[in-house]
Every structure is written in structure tokens, then in C-alpha cells.
Amino acid sequence: MGTPAVELSALRFSYKKGRDVLAIDSLAIARGETVFLHGPSGSGKTTLLGLLAGVLQATSGSVRILGQDFSTMSGGARDAFRARHLGYVFQMFNLIPYLPVRENILLPVRLEPARLARLGGRSLDDAVRDIASQLDIEQYLDSPIAELSVGQQQRVAAARALMGSPEVVIADEPTSALDTDRRERFLKLLFASCEKAKATLVFVSHDHTLMPLFSRTVELMEINRAAKVGADA
Ligand SMILES: Nc1ncnc2c1ncn2[C@@H]1O[C@H](COP(=O)(O)OP(=O)(O)OP(=O)(O)O)[C@@H](O)[C@H]1O
Image (cartoon, rainbow, N blue to C red; front, side, top):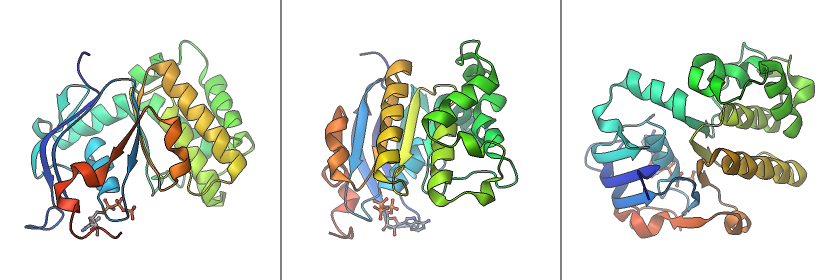
């Protein structure tokens, strides 16, 4: 199988001392898998994605992404690793408000030569127009982020995540603000991009109807011993 894309071992995480939010003995996600991460509100889905993205650090145990153990890396090394290998759409979109849409989408390839190289020689302008037109935000490329609706910002965050074909894509409710038509187009683009790049996808949503699209569902309540008590039903 080679090195898994994601490998958790004896993972524990708490925001406050003495109260574990996550206690996962083991979880492995192979490269190229598309995973629907499911669980009730409060079961720790967003927290787990934060650990996979290296934004949060495990209290104990290990989080390995593409064979790299985050617990042995400095904050700066995790930031560099994230820029190079991960695409993510978080609930707070983390877009840069004073930059236009175009520059927000281009950030990963401007920061990371490996992602620029994966554009395969296409010009930045072509690449950004291509992804923006697929997400129906081409007409906003020169607009400041602050002038966009929440659904439009969500699509900018999605375009940025997919720029330069990262090996691992992490998405937290990425379709929550989209209408049905745009949601379908976004999902089509997401799966096509992941397949083309042989990327691994870890996707959180409360929308059960999306489950059949994925190669595997991970039920957080089944693997997270800390979630048995305290999660909302
Ligand atoms: N920054 C924080 N500080 C302290 N506790 C937190 C913080 N963020 C989340 N928690 C707690 O951690 C637990 C898991 O939260 P998390 O957001 O990961 O759940 P979730 O499954 O993503 O929920 P939802 O489906 O509602 O988004 C909850 O009990 C929550 O109150």
C-alpha cells in the first residue's frame, strides 16, 4: 500500500486540560481514498481536521500525514508542509480580505514552487480562470473578498484549496452555503481534481446524501472513545 496519506496512532487531543475531545487508537487512510467523515455535532470532526491540517497539535500520540509526523515538526515546518501538500476549506474560510479574489486563489502557487510546478506549464492566468469558471466566480476575480457573499467566498476558498493539485484535500462543510446547482458543480470539480491528482480527500458534512460519492465513510463515534459522552445526539 505504501505510506498512508493519513495515519493516526494513540491520538489524544484536549482543548482544556483533563477533558479529551479526541481519543483515537488508530486510523489509516490510504493515498487516493475519498473519505466522508461523519458524526453528530460536537463529536470532534472539525477538531480532527485541524489536527490533520497541522493547525492543532496532538496532546499525545501521533498524526502522520504522507509519512511526516507533525508532533516532531516545529510550527514553521508544519506551515511549510501544509502549504506544499495540503488543500483545505475550513468553516472560517481564512481568505485574505484586502486581496482580490484572484490573489487569494493564487496564494498556494505563489507560496509554494511544488504547487506551481503542478500547473504543468499553464500560465497562472489560465489556471486561475479555469478553476474560477468551473466554480462560477470568474466574474469576481478582480473584486475584493469583502464584497462577496458567503457562498461566493466559500467557492473562492475551494478554488484556493485545489490550486496546484495538493496531495491531501481537507474540507469542512465546504458546500454549506451553496445552492443545489453550485453544490453539484463544486462536488464534480472536487472529485475530478482529486482523481486527476490521485489526491486523498477527507470531507466533513452533515449531508448524508453525499455519502455514496465517497470510497469510504468514517464514523467518528465508532473510533473516537472520547466522543461517547458529551456529543449531542
Ligand atoms: N476552541 C475550542 N476551545 C474549547 N473547546 C472547543 C473548541 N473547539 C471545539 N471545542 C469543543 O470540542 C468538541 C468537539 O468540537 P468540534 O467542533 O470538533 O465538533 P464537530 O463534530 O465538528 O461539531 P459540529 O458538527 O457541530 O461542527 C465540542 O465539545 C466543542 O465544544
